Image 1 (cartoon, rainbow, N blue to C red):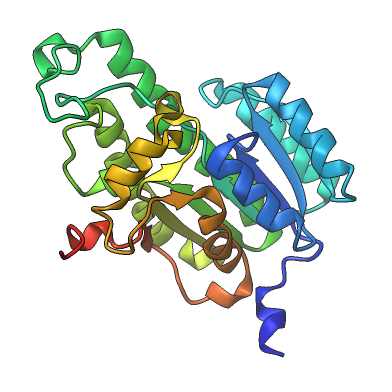
Image 2 (cartoon, rainbow, N blue to C red; image 1 turned 90 degrees about the vertical axis):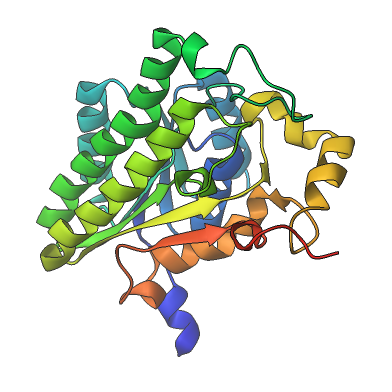
Amino acid sequence: MMFERFSVKGYGAIVTGGASGIGLAFVEALAESGARVAILDVDSISLGKQVDRLSSRGLDVRGHKLDVTDRKAVDQVFAEVSAEYGRLDVVFANAGIDPGIGFSNPDGSPSEAGAIENYEDERWNRTIEINLNGIFATIRAAARHMKRGGGGSIVVTTSIAAYLNEGMIGAAYMAAKAGAAHLARNAALELAPYKIRVNAVAPGFIVTNIGGGWLKQPEVQNSIGATVPIGRIGDADDLKGLALFLASRASSYITGAQIPIDGGVSLGKRPA
């Protein structure tokens, strides 16, 4: 049956940054489809709440507090989860932060704080450490266990900021996401002989808590949504179908891809 190709029942899965936003949508997509999911997140309060909520629905989830910049901790948690599940089939390398405003304010005026000559080292380094180096640590740990297990699927969260210029987005975020996209392609080539697929999802404007949750404001949704070809900004739930596709055998002949999920933003502005 065709639908069987989308099955992840019994899979062992890990989602970093999985206690909120896009990561939580990935967790729900997998767990609701029968996978056993380890949620990794630095926010222990949100982590506990989501584990309790999902577990109360009968879903097989468990939580591990993890900072992806702590590489020893990443390796340790991956070893624990792999041993507990007896397999590691799917890893979503999703954890990331928003570095704040870019060189333009939302109204198009110049931003002093985001101007490159004023960009602080701490802001740059922290963003690169989490959004790029954290992805590297996650892929590395996943590869070790998936090689021993005979294969798997790694999915990296990038962004349309990986290939489109946007003045409102901080320079460090754009550089990190572009780096993560190329890292995913390189890893896909290296790991293909081991039956490990590596792909990336590139979200556009998605309503999450990132950026202080500014996309939750109705006026912002209306103004930005009017420019999106499909006519609205996205919700984290919009990523669930793609997540399940990339995690399952339905995408078994796809690796090294970066798939935009942006309502058509990559195409240009919505025609009048």
